[in-house]
Image (cartoon, rainbow, N blue to C red; front, side, top):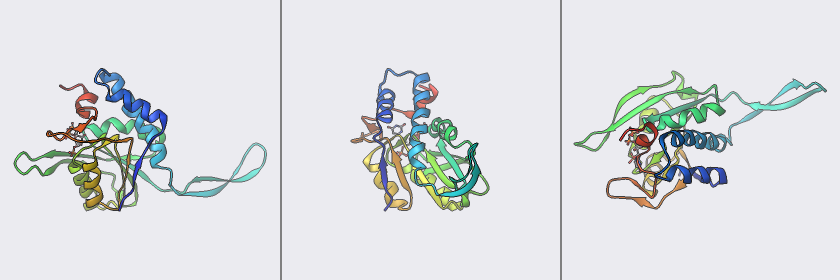
Length: 209
Ligand code: PRP
Ligand code: URA
């Protein structure tokens, strides 16, 4: 069973409250989503392996730690996941960025992939899938399934707000994928929106609606 990491750092909780507020405008919302992604990346990458290397300080030769060459990738789920990419790549500038786009078929309600462009070597990369909202979990579960079909082996999911239903869905479908969130909210409403949530993340990020 995958682990759920809820990040209760005061800075994360403070910024999350600001973006939940319906009076927060597009500019501030966008900036804070990226700041949250940056802060969360610090925790998402906490267990990356290290190795020792020899360096010379101005004083002497010493052994010190560096990341042990694990290659990273960020895969935003279009479109709202895009709002978190700059925050992640600020901390991991060498990360490659893939994109995956899904829409829900109105007849079958099944997620359909409409766009996918990934780094060629995703099988060797530690992938961080980003999406601000994990509601029913249908989008995240399908995106992870599509990534695995293309060879991805190491995937972490980073969301700002999750509903218990979405967490359960991803855990059921992808027991190997750890989930990192800033908050687990109460429930979904009849329209599949997270309560209390923050509304439609894509619309608030891009100023549509
Ligand atoms: C939102 C959100 C997730 C999805 C979550 O995207 O960014 O991708 O809904 O819902 P789920 O867990 O029930 O699948 P949306 O489909 O509104 O598209 P958008 O990013 O283009 O706004
Ligand atoms: N997608 C959103 O953008 N917000 C929700 O609350 C649920 C799905």
